[in-house]
Length: 207
Image 1 (cartoon, rainbow, N blue to C red):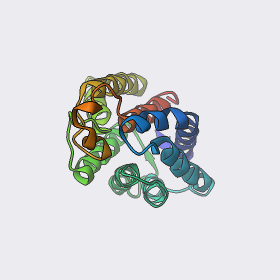
Image 2 (cartoon, helix red, strand yellow):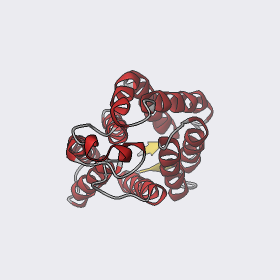
Image 3 (cartoon, one colour):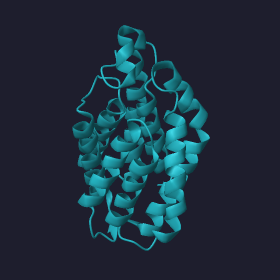
Image 4 (tube, rainbow, N blue to C red):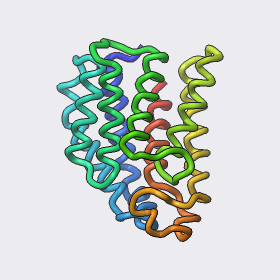
């Protein structure tokens, strides 16, 4: 079970990971985007981190919605609205819950991923964060359906997410700034897919 205290601890570690990987994510974005993904993600989660002490005793839905609103208001580029929508929709799905189990976590994740699909009008194979999100969700749901423990479920998700990240190198970008490059975007790893993989990896490390 994950309660508000545990969730805020996880979010704290995600914030640290985004700061740690800020330069790397920005270098990835420099090749095909606006050179700001790492900077934006670090700034957004630094803002989230400042709010965490006051959120630890709140319900899961409130925490997630607050994270989403904070990201929307502080993260520039496409990532802010996309990640913000994901957290806000996940928060709506978890409204009023004082804790969440594996089933709740997967529901929140799936709801968040669907929000990204709708907001970004994108799907698999378009060289976006969805190319790590979607395979990760499929892998986790498959493990969960076999009654695997949460650590096993998350590990499967992380492996699938990083496989998805690797797969973006061979894709032609069709969304966002990267789409302007057309075939020249091939050979470059998608920064949004990478930041999601880091998030999921951080979550998995705490279970």
